[in-house]
Each structure stands twice: as structure tokens, then as C-alpha cells.
Image (tube, rainbow, N blue to C red):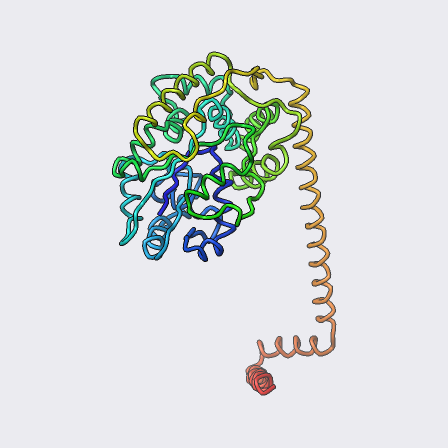
Length: 397
């Protein structure tokens, strides 16, 4: 079985979507991807690591044990995949491998990796999409601080420091059972990453139709607009509304991949630091002898490119992104208002039907009989007999 533990922002949502939407076909090929809902493996990861996540951890209770039991019972191969598993402690990783390692099962670890220069801006944008308000400069400063004292730094290095993740997850596995899938460079064939995963899973990539790539990145003005919106919504919007209205509808469905926006990169000093660290990681992974699906050279970043600072953006571009977001939300509000009007009309129609029923002579006579039965014992006995006769008549028909 294959245990894919991340890292975030390496096409994981894209791959998981293919696996989820093709479960039946995979089973025909003897491969289990056990998920009744798209976030099933996410919930199982939360449960394994006992991570607080805006209340979702309560919904996750028991899901890891259930998933592991289904994998152990399955006679063929299986895939478990979620990127937040990358942050698991050594003890949690060892438990996961033990829980999934049933009779006749051989656990293989999969880690998908992308060069650090691309990961840093992608992770800041992901933070912003999860209601964070930290500026880009402050985010980069936190990550470059050797103390790694902030929550942001601890999370980032927990899910992105490749040698450390593989130390925690691969300590009990031989090197040939640890597979590093490298993310192709920009400009590569759009299906190449899926082809690498499919080859590792032992399936023909041409049998499956990849959907649209999930988690398209935001441009610089859209990122800063969203960060500022997070400031305004800080004490206003509950998390479940933010997820559905802001992150899913406004960001993922509309603003992500918006044409013409500047792409976010690194300032020169941060680029030099990240590039050297990425080179060190690639050399370390090469020394360890893991199975590499792709090429470790893809973890070595390209040279620096012109930097557009999201903390000092083109205000006209930010305003344009804000107007687009406002138009999207206005359209959604109009749809909700139409539904409200339609529902009001239905309720009014039902109330009219009830009033008409109450006005009929038969109904009014029944109401008088019920009122009399409340006051008169003889009438009460008669009314009870009437109800019994009505009941037996209904059953006979």
C-alpha cells in the first residue's frame, strides 16, 4: 500500500481529486482509495494527529482507525493520501505505518516535493486563504528566523522541510520503500505530474481523465486584497461561512488564476537563502538513496525573477480585484434573495390553502365538535367513537 504524506502545494489536491472520482475504476484494478467524501483522508489525518482545526476535529473522531481497518482488510493495494500528514511527529508516523501494515501488506511511503523557491510564496498565499492577516515580509521574516518560534514557522517547516519529514516518516522503512515524486518545472506537460503518480500507483494514466487543477494560485493584487479582507472580516464572519463564501466561491472559483495579474515570487535576499537551502536538501535526498520518481534536479530552483511586492502593491490592481470580488458576492446575494422570495411565495400559498380549508363547513363543524368535547363528557365519548370509526375506515381502504 502507498501512504502519501504530502507535501502541501505539490499537486496533492489534483491527484486526490482523480483518485476520489475514479474509485470504482480503481477497485476494478485492485486498488482501494477508501473515501465516502472528498475530505475523508483529511479528517483521518486530523484524527491521527489530534490536530485542532476549527471544530472539524470533533467530526474527525474515529476516522483514522476506520480508514486503517478498511485498508488492512482489503485484499489488494491501497492508497492513503493527505498533505497535512507531513507534519506528523515521529511517534504518530510510526503508529500510522503500524496501523496500515496488515497481513500481506507492505507499506511504501510517498512524498511529493517541489523546489523551495516556489513553495514559499505558495504557502503564504495558502495562509491568506485560511484567514491569516500576516504581511508577506513578516511571513518571510518568521521563516528565516532560526528560532522558528512562531506558529506560522513551526507549521511551515513541519510540512515543508523535506529531509526532516523523511526522517520522521521513513525511519522504520528501507530506502527502496520511500518514494520521492518531484513536481515538474513550469512549462512541463500538464499531465506529467499525474503520469508520475500513476506509474507509482501501478495504473495507466491514460485510463483516467484529470479534472481542472485544484488550488490555482492567486496573483499579487488578489493576495493582498484577500489579506485586507481578512482584516475586515476578523470578528464578523464565522469560519463555515468564510470557507464557503470567501475561500471556495470567491477565491477558488473566481479569483484564482485571474489573467493579467503579477505572479508572486521572492525578493532577492530571500531567494538566495531559499535557493541554497533547496540545493542542500536535494543533495541530502540524493545521498539517502530513495527511489526518485522524476528528477532531484527539479528541486533546484531557477534564478531570481523580477519581484512584485504584495506589501506595496499597485493599488489600482488591488481595487480591481476587490471590485471583482464585490461583483461575485453581489451576484450570490441576488441568488439568495431570489430563493428567499420564492420560498416566501410558497409559504404564502400554503397559508392560503390552510385558510381555505379552515373556511369549509365540514372543517368548522369539526372544530365545534372538538370544542364541545373539551367541555362535555358525553360529547367527548362521542368524539372518541367518531375518531375510532374514521381510523378503521381509513385502514380498510
